[in-house]
Length: 207
Image 1 (cartoon, rainbow, N blue to C red):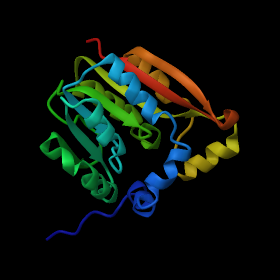
Image 2: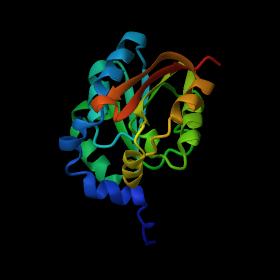
Image 3: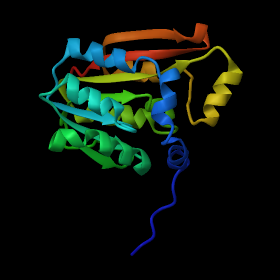
């Protein structure tokens, strides 16, 4: 049997943080509920992909918001997926999980009606542009991409600290999303009195 490849820095990070992830992230991963509520008003997808599904919090919410949908969750961290598997088991075959990086489309072209990135793209360094392009390929015409993520900060020291935690906060996601998708929702909101801004974006594939 061949040895497993060495864990990446991101995989090691989530091996350490997986046990406290759900208990701590509520304090700064803002907008996760809002983006799902917005989506429920815009679309009724039959096939959903979440990239960077983590511990499965959004997978459960997606399954409840869209009971007609089949859902695929992709994540690089096997530790996080083990936690997700416990949460989504009650949905049976309607929710399936894949342990891999999202560096290419997840299925045949135009497989999904909705692709969700929730605080994932800002940690794809490098790779965020490739992931957005893969989502464009994965979406059927008229399908939606939804992104909630860190946008930027006016504080260099905070940006440097977030970089230590593998997060890039340079306002770089919004232009790429706008270049490939027609914005339906495109908002910036401040957190903790302007320490940082986060992005809520829903776009439609028009070709």
